[in-house]
Structures are given as structure tokens and as C-alpha cells.
Image 1 (cartoon, protein in one colour):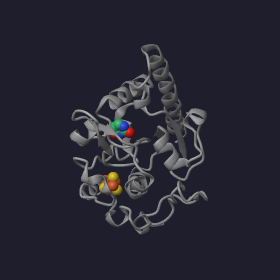
Image 2: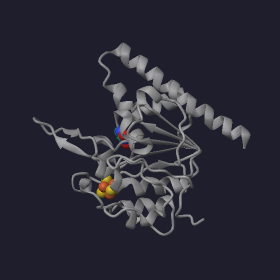
Image 3: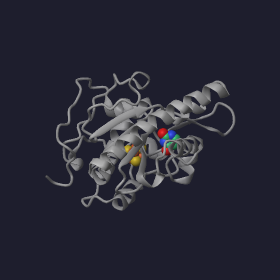
Image 4: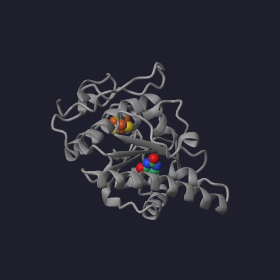
Length: 244
Ligand code: URA
Ligand code: SF4
């Protein structure tokens, strides 16, 4: 099997709006209007990052400061997939460095996960935003299906290079675009679900949702649940390591 192929057994849903984009096709031959033609022949994270820096496969590059590619160990056993870079990430050029990233870092520590064994990325690599009605703030705007689809070859290539044992989708945007639109994070959080992406795939909430909690007590409770979910992923990584 060529290195440009992902795992076998990919499936697609019947829903044209939010089909789980098949992952067993050659990365470079995927649908038009996506980043597929830009995927370098030689799949390394450096090559991918360099190629993604000039991606214009959807319109988001026009508003964002720069492509924010995934980061972490090329041999990461655990991959965390968020939605898109936020304001701080857009300016810094690194994923999960803003408020949500800080919360994620704390939760990873609490869950006993070493950041060095993790690869963090997003389903969309440019910041999608609209201007605030007043002032200069840039307000996060959920990426469109077409943007997620355009960006998907970058994520598939990151997965093909790192081949994580465990993937955790953070929030509904990542979970539904990768696991199907019927996926409910609230119903199915921290449950491993069959997926062609990796041997073990689960989802939990997005750390930003915890930051939006209405009061401190609820924020604390939600953070504890988030940590508990990450512990499930951590336990799976350790179990696999013992079995290896
Ligand atoms: N939220 C995300 O989903 N990703 C980031 O990189 C930062 C915030
Ligand atoms: Fe390319 Fe993704 Fe940026 Fe769109 S969001 S321009 S597909 S890197």
C-alpha cells in the first residue's frame, strides 16, 4: 500500500451535506476544490507545514493572518483535533495557545498526559471570523462545511504521517465532521467509536465551551468532566503501550 493511502475500510454516509469524507482514497486525488492537489509527494510534517502555509483552497486564507498547522510529536500516540485556530492562534501561528489552549494544557496535566506525546491540530487551519459590531474584536465564526471539506486533506495527511493510536475530537464541529453529523458529543462523549481514522477514536467537548460556562461552579464541574474524558484517552494509550 502506498504511503499516500490511509487505512482501509473507510465508509461514507448517505448524507451529501455532512458525509464522512472517505479516507481510503489516495490523499492527492480527493475531491476538487480541496487542498488535495497541494499535498506533497513526500509526506513529512515539515513538508506538509510548508505546503499548507500557502494554501488557498478555500476563502479563509484571505481573512486569516496565517495557516495554523498542527503541532506535536510526529510519533504521537494521541492526536487531539479541534475546530479551527482562534484569534490568539491566528496571530501566533500555533494551535491551542489562547485561553482554550491554556485550559487544554491544564486538563492534559490533570489527566496525566504528557504534552510531548500529543499532536494537536484542527479540522480547519485558518481562523474564520467576523468583525464585532463595535470595536475591533474578531468574533469566531463556525467554519462552513465547504471549508472543512477543503481543509480535510491536510488533516488526513497529518494522520497518515503520525498514525496516532488514539484520536480525540474536541467539540461538535470536529466530531461531526469526522464521525458523522448524527454524532452527539453530549451523548457519546468519552466513548470509543469505530472509525477509519485511527484504531481508537472518541470525542469530548471543546475546551472553549467550558470557558463559556455561566458561573464558576459550573465551569469547575465541566472542567472536571473534561479531565475525566481525557483520562479515558490516557488510559487507552497506556493500555496499548503495555500490550505492545
Ligand atoms: N480552538 C480550537 O479549536 N483550536 C485552536 O487551535 C484554538 C482554539
Ligand atoms: Fe487551505 Fe484550510 Fe486555510 Fe482553507 S482553511 S485556505 S483549506 S489551509
